[in-house]
Length: 589
Image (tube, rainbow, N blue to C red; front, side, top):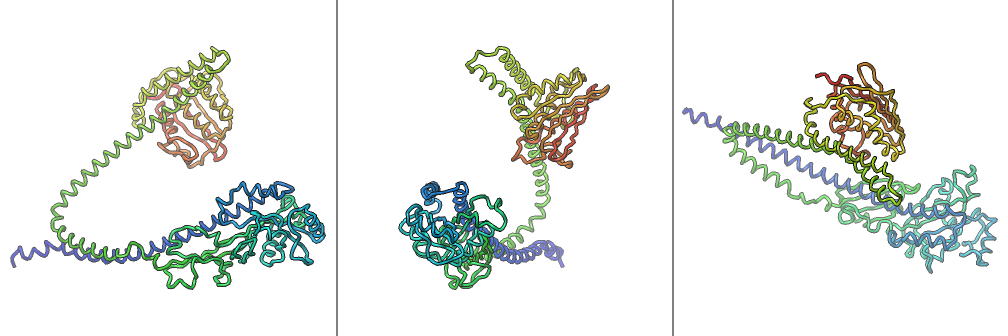
């Protein structure tokens, strides 16, 4: 057989294999896409259920908060008359936030021995309202004495004893027993005053005592009971304009009283449950409402599952076959181009790495520059503000204080200029090539000078600032770098010290100087003791404390450049102590 004919199948083996692999991938992709579509629909439905439950909870909490606000009106006063009650309700602008509100009322609690006197006061018009009805002997009575809005419809309920209605009685007694808000079971609201159409809903009750319940003697809550604040709510008003994904176009909601789905417990249904045929998804969620349990049934119609992804499976199959054909045509030329592609890819990775490194160097430089310049700029701004206020004062200026302010501003300006000149040294920190200006420095004098600059900040934070130093501690150091170190440590002490005192302690022996800055603030865990000295590292969230995480990194680099070392000892909640140890002879060259 001629060599070129026998070599042909081997030459195209990769192309044939690509066809097989392409077909296999197409089949697997089709299965995966189908499963993904099903999972996405289920996730969309779960998300819609979560949003629906949250939306209904927010509606309930808004109504409960309204009722508790009215409770606060009664608990904050020994006696609330109808004018005060109406004025408070008008201040809430209920028509804006609760457009479907039927009314809020107060039912007075009456013992049998109080009934005759109450009815007599009503008949003599000493107390506005109606006598207690329906009549008849009972162990206890209530009478609706206030309602808002009070109109020709709602005023018909004045004097009604809600203890005579079983559902309301059960809720009122439960509220009385627990001292908490209680809801009735499913009830048809009373036509005329609770709801004009007598729709299905529920009523919330909160007991009102003459003194805080936790101060009442055990077993005698009714002796100090003034009555109940109550709020009737229709389910139509509660669910009106309820919005969540798919509702009400493709997702239906039904609410049942209790933990069982029964027709006689139905509180609300966006459509009759029997009209929903062959649902795509269905989920029941139990919700607690003021001592009662509701069952929320979410049902997704088939239209919910029919998303814009219809036809995606065919698209995947067609695209897979097309890609398979392209792979067959391309694979034959791929081998020759592979070496060139790999070389080009390697070059691209190299160039990309260099570009990222350059961007990182730029970002690091800008971040460090901003952090370093902030402290002198802040101090300079503060001195200028104080100088401006003193010059603007009506009293004759204190020339000595003016001179001090100007001198302090000049020091900060000089310091700022020195920092600008030395910003180029920041890039040398990590490489250990920082240039130092070594000279004899009295660390005691330097510490006291820095502390004086922070006195204003300490007074503003309400924190004490104390220095414990036996006297001069002279060494061969870079004065400006030491000033940077101490400034960073004091700034951190006030930032995380929470207004507690800050102590600076200086000690020296024949060979070393030891500087300690101690605060009594939030502290940090032991595992963060070394991490916080890294670049951009921080032990607390940037949402609560500002900064870029550069201060302690720069501090450590400067201390090590001076031949010293820095450490921290801290316990969470008990503050932190930063210790700097420096050789008095300066860094070893």
